[in-house]
Amino acid sequence: MKQSKRYANEKILVLGLARSGVAAAKLLHELGAFVTVNDAKKLEDNKEAQELLEAGITVITDGHPLDLLDEGFSLIVKNPGIPYTNPILEKAIKKEIPIITEVELAYQVSEAPFIGITGTNGKTTTTTMIKQIFDTYQPNKALLAGNIGFPTSDVVLKATEDNVLVTELSSFQLMGIDEFKPEIAVITNIYEAHIDYHGSRDEYVKAKWRIQKNMTENNTLILNADLPEVVELSKQSKATVIYFSVSKKVNGAYLENDWLMYQDEKIMKSTELGVPGLHNVENALAAICVAKVSGVDNESIKKSLSLFSGVPHRTEYIGTYNEIKVYNDSKATNILAAKKAISGFDNEQLVLIAGGLDRGNSFDEFIPAIEQLKAIVLLGETKDKLKEAAKKAQVSEIICVDNMKKAVTEALRVAQPEDTILLSPACASWDMYPNFETRGEEFVAEITKQVGK
Image (cartoon, rainbow, N blue to C red; front, side):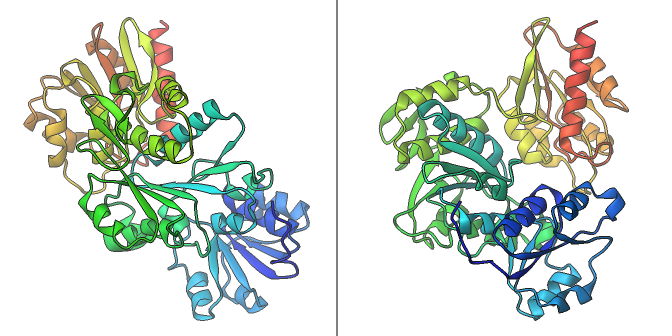
């Protein structure tokens, strides 16, 4: 970490805790700032706040009092999840107090360069693939950071100029950057998402596009050539643009005759990739672009990608039981993500478990993806809607259940040797679970429990 006096003796407000807020508060404290932390949770229910109090940091809990801004703060570091419509942030904007997110703070003091990865789908898988490629090529060089579960303000404390921070970035984080400039940036794709936070699709796209706002021709921007909107946006960037594509030859990485190619070089067969699905081919092509720009040799790329077994809850291979393969794709919280997961399997030998939170949408666009399924097991608020879609898709066996235990029981009953069971809900988890991780963990636990009988 750089020895910076930038924030020494400055009064700075950290708004919202969780892991990123705690990391930002500790980093600012170490940099000599006068830090005040404000979190909505009550102190007695707030272990993070108690920890910061013990470290000598001022903590105000149980709401966001507007008069807090009368303290004369020169900067606010906000939790990415807090919207800019929050009254305290609206007041801060009127008072012209700068507002950043924790990744911007970390960038300002980092000795290590950044590789930034964002996108609607696939960013965690792509980030993890890049990290594994670096680990094969040069162990201990790459450090995971960002939205993947490692607060960047924590990681920069141990990072040196010899490291590289492979950083997953959400649209929420990118709205709060100022100077942030990755050496290499990846946008896996952009589809409609988080409209409740951003207000419109246009604002969501603008947030994602901010990843490249400070990049120059000396930096590399890696984009999906199969998305016309992204290709059009690329004309606005000053960065050197390299594309990846599963449908055509481009100036970067592409799929050709089942080979993953990079500028006429054969890297590996698509069948050698450790995870199934065309969406994972896309992720691998993006990772290959990063690796080649970074000087990684083809053998290291091939070795790491062939051994890549997926990320938890993202088309994660769980195991083979009685000759039935099982995959956990609980992260598929929308129709598009589930469609991409299903595309990696033979529908006639696929038993799909789906359903979850009802957001008011129909499932007509899901129908082509689930045609010819061997069976579909449905649960959650959307099970009746999905049942109608499955009927239209002429799925021969449609089963509705009340919980994951019954879903696994029915899936195992229907599946035969050489078949695959896939949890890919196409819906958020909040009707039955606090998050998609808990949903996936219960699925895996039930599989393990029931096949062990």
